[in-house]
Image 1 (cartoon, rainbow, N blue to C red):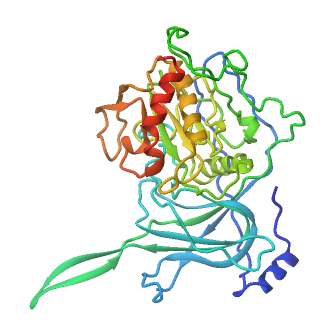
Image 2 (cartoon, rainbow, N blue to C red; image 1 turned 180 degrees about the horizontal axis):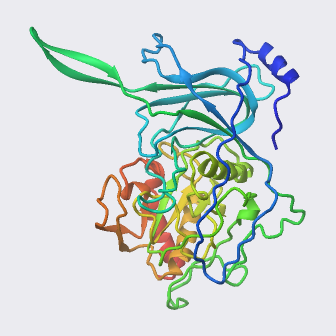
Image 3 (cartoon, helix red, strand yellow; image 1 turned 90 degrees about the horizontal axis):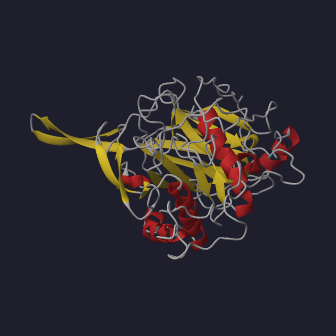
Length: 434
């Protein structure tokens, strides 16, 4: 989808801007796709991987110190001044230590090809440590995992500027004459880098064959079962799910093999915090960007979520291993075992999700949880793998359909989406015929 920014275009673009673009820095390519350990997988699942990488790229640019910005009243931090870069659509900031927190504010602005002005400054969600593999797992202990902000979708861009300002903290010190207040900037994590992701294009598929998984239920049955129709076990009709090949996953990026847990007792609902500035026709590109960011920039074995849902209610397969299987994800730190993670594309702190999205969550959970005998309107127990709310080993009682914030101290999935989970539980139970 994207090519490199030609020098002539860069000159023309720079001339039209109020402030000139600096010359592009040499972008480094982040780690090659890691090699996986041998994984156990059901005999019914057969892995098919592309041998030729699909279009797409990641630029990794180290941040530099910034002078104190007196106009903003902020301490000097790190960042990059305006510059022309090869085309990208999604960005984020990463750092060396996955356990380190970025106590500060990350802001970016971008330039769209052909535009005469830059975008406004946008905030990037910095609290992303609540997503990821559980402590002690092979994925977490691989040595490749990095700390990171949430990714932000910015649409097609050929210029970028970023600033990371640390929070300021005050403490009281005793002096010979009394007390004084001392203000200091928080220490930023080491190895801060800006990741610019070009999601590329999906593989050519003239007939779009394999875009959706084949439904288990008879074609056309999308209504919930009535009480007279229900049979045990309670399993809702299988919804249409866009496969990984359907959204254009480059299977050469992820690790080989799959990881499974024993069962699926609960579903955790997330938002991706990538913003809402995407069209539903761009959802596959957004997912390819998140996938590349999770694997190439953050060091995960695959995309972290088991499923994704866009704002038009389309459901997408996430982490590889089979949509009907208990695939181990990296979505809810401490509670990935025996659960599935569903992420809605977008940010729902103040934006309400549409009814199509909430209904898609209900349909998906009615089917997925039903396969493992779980009641979407019920409660269950999960053993914590370690996190900031529950110590490792503690059995925690949770809703079978929970929000991310129920298992970890986080705003995810946003206030507005979290408030709709009750409706999703009720609808999912109806789809199961309960």
